[in-house]
Length: 328
Image (cartoon, rainbow, N blue to C red):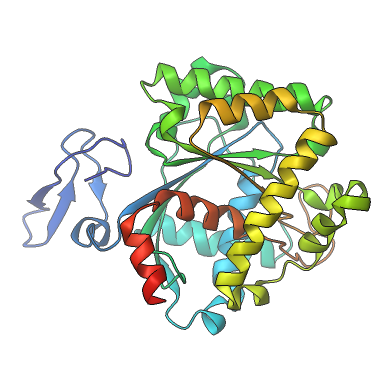
């Protein structure tokens, strides 16, 4: 089993705590207490590692906060009849509901400190056409992705991700081509130092703060603006159609990256070093905030796309295929 804290494959120990009859599950490597629901239901809800990789101020922490807001405040369960999510331990409950309340109150979360983070663990059941799973969400400071040595020290969780998720705000890069290539190069070198291999991973490139890019989505790129602006959760009711559209937009974003951002080296390096490369656009807030405060209610756009991409790539096998064939 994968320990969600030290991310090693271990067999959890069961011990009684405080002289009581209550059993707890401990990792023999890091001695952390693993959530009972995670350990007991491991085979039914296998882990999916979601690691946010990106520079400072590129929207990683706000993305996760808005994702939690979307899961708890919007109407996904109305359109996905068997869908629900729940935190697997007290820390995860505090993170999910605390972030949702913070955004409701008009405030943004603080920047994430540079440390090896504890994951937010969420059980996801009933996502159409995907197996049920435990989402292990890791977020650490953007400084950790500026140098491979920092990535090795503070972001070792990336080695256990089936899909690497790069979050990039084009509007916050002085030189988009150089910045994108630097982040990718740093990640490839760092993962190698962690004894990982990017050729065993899929790459999900997420353009964050995409509301700032709408002005560039003109002419043949107009479909990108339309996709973003019309990005309400209502469209998710038709999941099969939605996933097909995600693939179409990914191809269009790849062309945009090559032809408008001139990031040919980034694309060549990504396609050479990963199993596959997919693209996504999101706007976590829908508009520019006023510092750490929100002047208007947030309107998340396409916020679930990156998670759906990661799940799509993490279950690239007979389990997911069977679920699709049977229409679960």
